[in-house]
Amino acid sequence: MRPTAQYWINTLQMTTHVEGGAFKETYRAKDTIPKSALSAAFAGDRNYSTAIYFLLQQGQFSALHRISADEVWHFYEGDPLEVIEIKPSGELTIHLLGRNPEAGEVFQCVIAAGSWFGSRVAAKGEYSLVGCTVAPGFDFADFELAKRDYLLNEFPQHYTLIKQFTH
Image 1 (tube, rainbow, N blue to C red):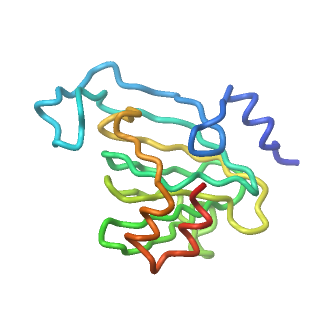
Image 2 (image 1 turned 120 degrees about the horizontal axis):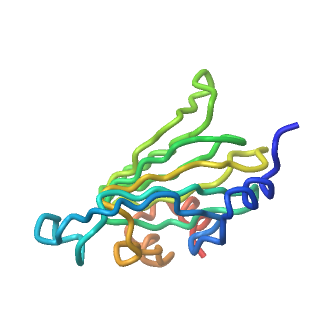
């Protein structure tokens, strides 16, 4: 019998994430990149890199949001996870994280800085345990939670997904 979602939440000491699901920061580089060496998208110095565990259960979703850095997603345990990405151009990509390449699943995917993205456990799955690595490191000053009306106006072609992945 495989571990439950609650087992991982307890074992990894995860807490509720603002965008949905549960998370635990596992790494924050001690050294920083000075603002002067970063693009204008960053409001200050940033750690070189950060990493978290992230867990979603069926019926939960990570609401659409964007950050100023690239984010690498890594699959660890559970069922496949759909990561929805809407690029600034409006191009939609649905990444399927999991352990079955024959079913189109991948162990990693990269979300480009500035893309809107969210995630959910694939149909019939119970939970997904993944990791996210951000470089330059994550800072809430670089985080923007999507406003439904704004995204519907910008990307009307993705109406259904925007309604599903926003509050």
